[in-house]
Image (tube, rainbow, N blue to C red; front, side):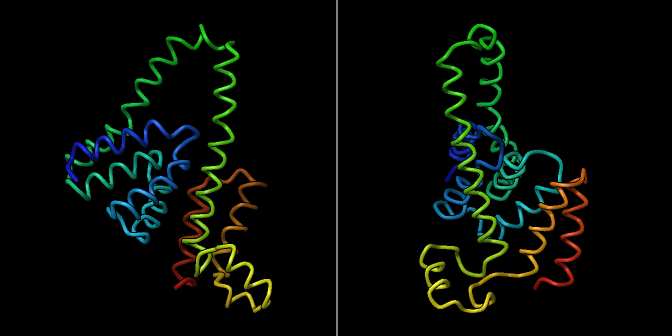
Length: 197
């Protein structure tokens, strides 16, 4: 893989990132971890955790990290530029044409059609996070059927209890209180350091 291909790969991600960076997680896993093996699953999980605590969107952080890992500083710049290239052209185009087309039924239909697809990609990312952080074995239909049929205890199903509690508690706190996300992540990191091995 050469540096120009890295640029084109991240241009593709930039074109597909409607709905925010989390819609890219599924694509990152498929391409960067499984297909091209530029990252291991563990490296990607760590990257996602670190990306939450550093400034910038997850897509930019991933592009910079992958580019830097494969081709050094120039690779980081090229991959990041690749991710941003479609956004720059789309924003310029949107600003120019939005007033003209904002009432168009076709444009409204396209935007309405993208929202559920973006939601589906975000839910897919949630399942990927759950498989990485909460379950010791992949959450599949066959695993769930075996669990229902045999009714084993929770631990043998492959659930990490403390990460599950952290996820539920974090969601509850964020849903009820206006807490800065960095505090939730820092507290979870401390708890994880002491209790999760």
